[in-house]
Image 1 (cartoon, rainbow, N blue to C red):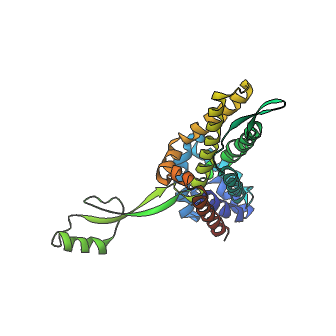
Image 2: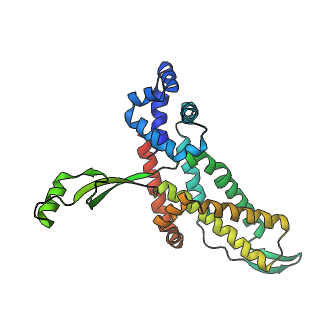
Image 3: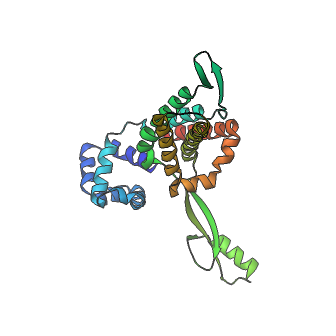
Length: 273
């Protein structure tokens, strides 16, 4: 979890001489920090399409990390938590009334549209590009029983299983295999915010079907709807959506949101220690 943050702590605490050695040689860095070296290899394989080469990836990443502010990730998630609270309100119901100056919508459509634009700019244009490479994962240790050996053999359980099921013959092995999951509170919170933003855009789209909306406003609304749909359709976010049941969270908005916010705040406190 938070690989880049862990990497940043090591890079930023290094002396200038040690940092120059790290820049020159990934092999040297890995020899001094074997666990981080292995995690870097995994990180690069996941993100290699965004880099020109392995060497440039290493140089670019640690130079950027060297100048990070300690609270950068914390600040980003604090902003997402605020946006989630802003977005989680009850479904907007529009209706039209007659006034002395003509027809008007309640609640005011212009105010809702301005709010949509503001939240979209904050979430999709500012926050998302800043944290996409920082979206974290957790490791679940899954127990697997098979004739193959996909992970680390648990010999105690393997022997017990063999005695119980095959008279002591080793026909199957009990292995523990680490399975990566992106269904973390931080990622769910971000996805929830995007989904709520999309719902607001859809409501404005439904309203414009029955009332006149200018072409400029239509373009803004459809742009937000398109951006959120494109993001939610990415395999990474589809996995989180499927495993976290975002629709149920939205339906039970306040209690579930509070649980997620509490989990994110707890993780951020742990990360600071």
